[in-house]
Length: 143
Image (cartoon, rainbow, N blue to C red; front, side, top):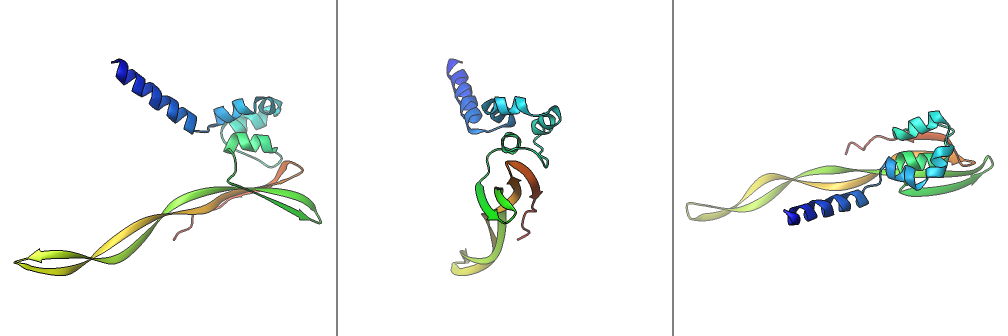
């Protein structure tokens, strides 16, 4: 019984440490979260963002970006956060296998498939002066 409890406890701790959640990020940036207006705190608590939010609010709502890009134009300095997604791309092809029938061995053709992970940019957020000026989500590629 003690052994089972220890295994469950370890599994729970490992899972908890590996997952970054809104609750964890809110604790990490508690002062920034408490400084948000009530309407923005409500959005952040539901994993939503809006134009005008600061980088800390977006971090709490969506987590850290996979990429950060900086750009300088005549309009000023902007920072773009990119969030990646992943999907499994299916590839279909013909394959061959050895088949033995009636003492004869021959090659039989059969349809086969593989699934390969593919990354894509699923969302981008553009900040100017530390505030969201534009954001968008992007669809998963079809193939």
